[in-house]
Length: 228
Image (cartoon, rainbow, N blue to C red):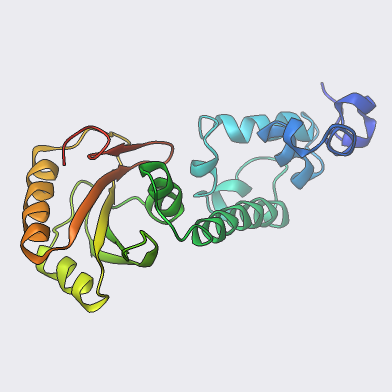
């Protein structure tokens, strides 16, 4: 049986002391969560409990962030206060990502589009389709949700997309949508839609620069793959 309190561990094994001595980046996800919860239960330490919580979501922090207070409280040793602490910490992390994304007003490659949109649509359980509208210096004028759909698809009105582009006097645009399934490969419908948007852009002299499919950890770029 492991000791319950972090204070009873060897100094090198204490996540708080490790953070102070070696820096925050040296801590594992489980060690960071152990600091949040402080102590475990009669059968396991805070670190063991943190590891068990992570294992329940296959080590996926994004999935952990989706757990409710009720689901977290189902773990022995996690009451409402500790569950709220975990949820709060993860929400702050997400908001930091959003703020960082907003600080990148100029787009030069697909990775920057991913960094801009990943915090917004990557972890949704339904599909959303967004347009990122740019001026002649490739600076973001705005991001705008074009449509919201179900688990596997969303209907996109191309007229609405380009109506917004004309309102903003956008010179070019990039479109993005998420795949809740985690699959990155575009469907035939995705490819057909991309070609329709490209042709509409040619007619209106508003260039479609890219179409990204975004998941929690990766993305597919039509431009990078030579499909635009």
